[in-house]
Image (cartoon, rainbow, N blue to C red):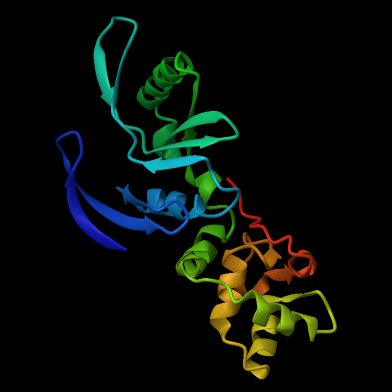
Length: 217
């Protein structure tokens, strides 16, 4: 991850660029909230298409005045095309933004696209954003499934707190990176909205080769 200055619609803003190991793209984000959104998008059912800083469009108001708009993100999932605006809630509810969003919703509806406003209330649920930041780098790793299953089958249970599981891994000389990677890739499942030390993990489906990430937007 790196920061740099980039021009968007003339103003110069501080931007962050990050590479997605899931979609093979580089995302450009202009706020911490957009970074959290980008990371969240790496988890959950894989999208058919995902892009940050989507192509600019022009839309107009009732007086036919033209405006330019660049969406924060675009995504396609199960045949539905989403246009996402990532905004802090206090800004999203401002009257001028509400009017803008209504016009954009109408504009994109004509193209069979669904315009959505995503706020921190959607992204930062409990401790999920902080937990996913810890797991993001593990998405770049290839999971050693054989070592993971060998370790899990030696345990007398199929559910444990994250802290307990890490302690057991240390005793078994299992590299902790394997656990981070298995959580990131969804082989170990748990409620990641909880504080990191209180996350309870289960792995019955992992042993049946049914791993899938449980964090969705």
